Image (tube, rainbow, N blue to C red; front, side):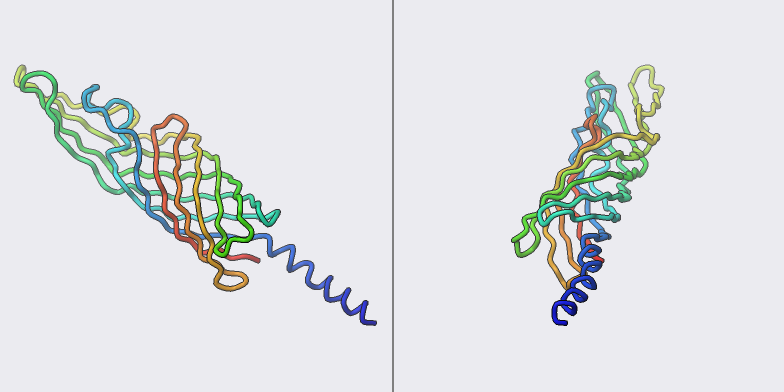
Length: 214
């Protein structure tokens, strides 16, 4: 009778143990913009204007499955906003040559999959996340007004690649911790580096989140 009772308890606990491997996460974060410098001397624009938008914020979430104590798989997505509207002025290489630029706000929406390598005996769930995905990236329109004393007529141009939405593959790596609050809830903190394959966009997201297991 005792063995039957223990077997019933084991079977009752099995679904809970299996389902506990799944978790969902919602997060809010700050984005440091690490994009390569915008080249003023090359047609006042070069090909990396995204660096002008400075830092921003993001909100997102994901779903994760922990297959082993040290390994988990997941998918995630977020919306990122670089709301600062850049503007500036520079003098050109020619005498009495000047350039003024203004830009519109930018946004991004990266979606991807990842693997998480977990240190199983760490008190705060120390982990390393490696991911790949595709990013919808909208770089706000950047307008440049160039003026020379002769002939004195301003020349207005739009920097190539701005004012458009592009879809770029990216890679991401981050280090994080998970602080358990209850058996089902945990606070997560991740800091990492994300870069599109064409090096147009580079950023350092810092994400604070809530993980819920079931």
